[in-house]
Image (spheres, rainbow, N blue to C red):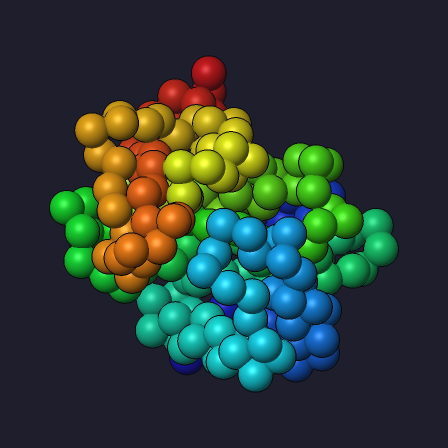
Length: 188
């Protein structure tokens, strides 16, 4: 297997996961504020299982959810990356971009910066035609990141997440960006 692609932005390294990331990642996933737009927080064991699935996705597809590390402090702050959507919906099959950062790193532009680097890898290295992003309609902070990286929403694409039937977070917005739109944003 080829070495996993590592990405860099001005302030961040998007890298493979290290075993010692688990403690900080589990703390992040146990934070009710970080997880407020998810059905529940994750236990340490669930966080470890998620890291295992992320590693498997990288092995299968060459891309996935990169661990985020600040260049200035070396601190692990969360993840950002590309993931195959694993449920059926009108827009699938699709590759989704997503992010999750520890609360103390919110509001500093890290999510947008890392997402921009991940989009670049998706379109340049992995030759993806389109990338989607989704979030509960109440998740305004994620929507701001989607807009900041040039993604576009057609409210007719909004959907009820099939894994959240009956949950208050079931309704999701869908944003999209294709390679041409990304190039426009890049050179815009």
